Image (cartoon, rainbow, N blue to C red; front, side):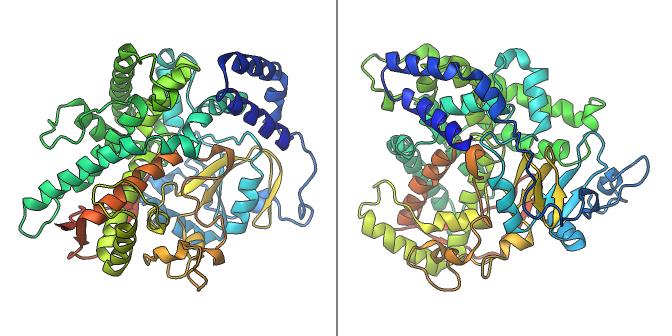
Length: 535
């Protein structure tokens, strides 16, 4: 069954790389498989997995015990709740310490029980058995907004976050040839280099404003601006003006970035804490809707301006924006995908702000580890003798992403019975694979140390990634529902990081940076790096 689904997806991908006539023919052939699609994502395998007979029952999975009427919600209440306002990493470490490598969190009003797993072997079993159409519910507040509050805007096309099964597969099949192919991402290197060069000039400006070359307290916001400008070029082939030094606070780019950051803060309250907003319209929910309204309206404005501008007939497809390339296939899909690119930074609702968090973490870690920075600079100089040259790739990015990951956990709904942690986990159970807690992170020797050499192919010591379970670190997810924008996310870092290192010596004279997580994981203090320009 799985091999057939892959063949169908490859047929769709191939169809978009050939002529329109052939594309239409193959698309019609695939359309005839509607019944096949509808049944493929529902697993009908009734066979029990190995170890099922000897496994402990689902009801025996340990976890916080709910009390009458309040369930486990009280644990998240102010003053009395042990989990109130707890950062995600701390929450999962506490649960893991209290109950072990598998935990059942139930008794939350309006939510199904959630099984959380911390053992990497269980993670592999779980994620490898998610089926060809992995079911990923969650982000209920966003799904509610897009499918109910503003369903008229999206015309039934919710994007990759809000749909499952056949509808999800068809959406991904349309966007994957453009979003997931490495050669497609590389076509945007020139655009990314233009934006990275302006970021370098801005850093030079900030450096010149202080005798010690220190960046301003809000420097992380400059990275948000850099990322949005990069996404704008990819999505629209257009500069949005985010990196202007005199950018007005009431300009669309500045307001858009501030709104995205606030949206994530609100999302923690709506998604992690008990969903009171489902019962009554809370102030948090109303503010969340207000922000999403603004983000959607602004993204729509950018999309309409780009589409109304048109594209010259002589422009080859590989030079077109993502919006125009997708619009040639399906305008509704193009709209939903580009809105996701702008608001969510492509696919997972944590990718975009986390990229900047990872980028900020990479700069901090290099500033904190001058010997690693010097080694990277030496490599960059060998490959980029000119300070203005574009692009190199390094294990530094992988290590920074490991320490400050894009995705800290992966939610799926089981499509077959599984044995996890020695317990029976039946089909249609929500399971969260948690990579931010101690069991997964401790797979790495000295996990808090910044050691890019872990990811060198030549590494054979105790620090090598080869000694680590492959599911201990999955920054962009795993399988068919991995982040659809990971190629562009990596491209931004691959282009900008070498240019920064080639042009500046970074130092960090302050106390160690604090990393924390609520909905997002990343640096929690001002990124006041010192950047001394190099000749």
